[in-house]
Image 1 (tube, rainbow, N blue to C red):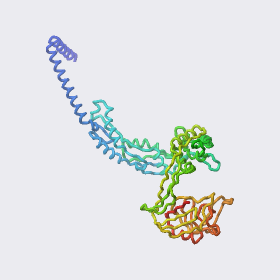
Image 2: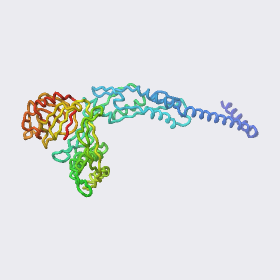
Image 3: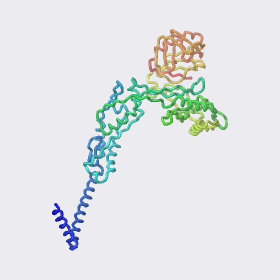
Image 4: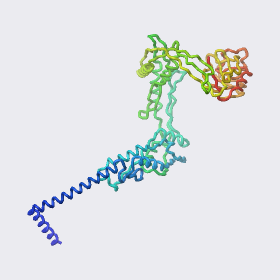
Length: 492
């Protein structure tokens, strides 16, 4: 062995000496070496150019999407592959003895096929040149999902209600009697948590398949504690007495009542702070201005109300319209009211009043039959289109403390005889009357046309708790004429 090694060394030494002694031979070998090297580099460059041209808009060699090879696929083909893989999801969730088969659409789980395909194409940018085009280097990608964790939680609360009871947040409500906000306490609960589903969805994004997973019931506290809700209550109650004056040319036109201020407020639990976020709703303030403030102004607009049939033909002018005054700086008023409440500072705010045209409201009746009640004349009329069928003014309606409501309604129930009760037990306002006949209900809260045995001598007066009182024969005519869904129009 030593002789072989010595012989090789001697041979190499002679070659080296030959190169040193023969520069021409050395130059020739060097030229050959660099020629071969240049050829290799050129071939490599050509291969790179070919691969880049081939895979510029295609998935690289060795690319997988959710466990399936998608090498060379275009953007459109990748989208199709993503959709195909998404359909492979077959998920079942168990908790205790409850088994729920999950359909993606049930929990709002959707595939973003375009984002998935684009991500597959762009994923090659993280690899070096050699790895990028190496088909042996596996490049895995996952499906991109969209979902709403709140929607999933609501779904779980519905499906697992037998074994879980979600927590309830404390509620702030305005007490009309005491004139302040009060707190209804919340309570802790148990849920099958939607957040426990997230790692399962991530697993399915990488490998869509049939899968059954168990999720345990979790103890969950309410977001806002009762004590924090109490602090919010105390805070907002300091805003209720705030004096906010609505002026026109320096003259007081309206001041906002505490119950109106209460109606502006919205309370949203904040998981980050464990407190309520208090907001003053622009829409609620605008509704207040439109529905409560404007009608108190002199010459407030009166909307015209027209009764039309289903073809749009005019049947009757219920209320004739009239132009009036209304503020034209509503957004400014809303901003000033909100800032006053936030800063807890009294406010005198000037309204710019201009003439406001009335609006026309069309009330459509699908059925030719409809019922009109005129509060001013106590007249009830049965109509068939434009033809008067029957009419009487031997009626009574609501007293000042319990007025009959106005508007357009539909008959929603009919009872031939019943016991009517209402008012507060132990007070003069309480009543319990058996055998009230021919009751035709049309307004939420129990408003109805019905027999009033006590009516004799009190026709055309305001004595009722809001219903239209009638003689028995008249009430029976109305009862027989009306069907469920018949239009009822009540106006002054």
